[in-house]
Amino acid sequence: MPGGRLTQQDRRQIADGLTEGLTYTEIAAGLNRPLSTITREVARNGGPAGYQADQAHRATKERAKRSHPAPAERDPRVVNDLEEQFTGIMVATGLSRMTARVLASLYLTDTGILTAAELARRLQVSPASISKAIGELEQQEMIRRERDPRRRRDRYVIDADALFRGWMASARQNTLLAGFARHGAQTLGPASPAGMRLRDVGDFFDHVGQAMIQAAEEWRQAHAARPAAHG
Image (cartoon, rainbow, N blue to C red; front, top):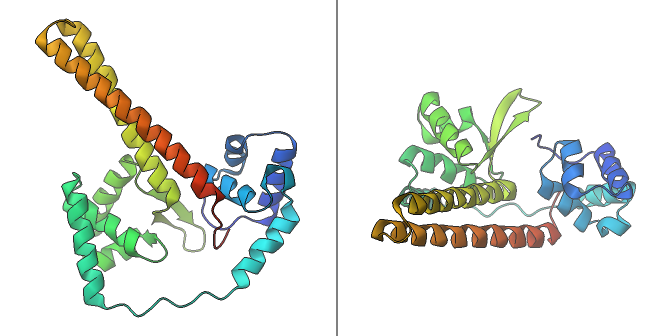
């Protein structure tokens, strides 16, 4: 999905959609934007009943004019140590080391956005290594790809939307495991030791998957209501 800030025309389309009674999902699809972009935009600019496109655009421009404090000087050794710790944690979850290093770089970069070339320079590895790691992260929906119109190249983003998609992908995997285990239990015989074991596995992953989905939806609603620094 495209990156960048919402334009005034985008905001007018949001306002029109709200007037027509469209859902946030429908509005997001019409603009080819992440759902959370629309929910945050509306929540911090009067809500569905009070949203006004021009007023929202002016408010966003005013927020953009506010000065932001420069980040504090960081000790490179401390940052490197942090990256190593982050990488180690991600490797422990099952990611390959290179994939974990790419993810750590994105998380610990202020913008949360890097191109493949920037990642290769930062990590001092080959473009092929970056490409393979990016492929793994995209497959697990832990990052998203967007096109940089100025530089005409792809860049990779870690943000709240990526977190949500990655979590939901894990929840879907749990649902698949639950379905497989229950099917296996029926195939082997629900009263057999193996069948009862698979039944318990299915119940466990179904419960965990549903809990993950509910927690993610609650988080997204809370996150959408939080004020953001820019639109």
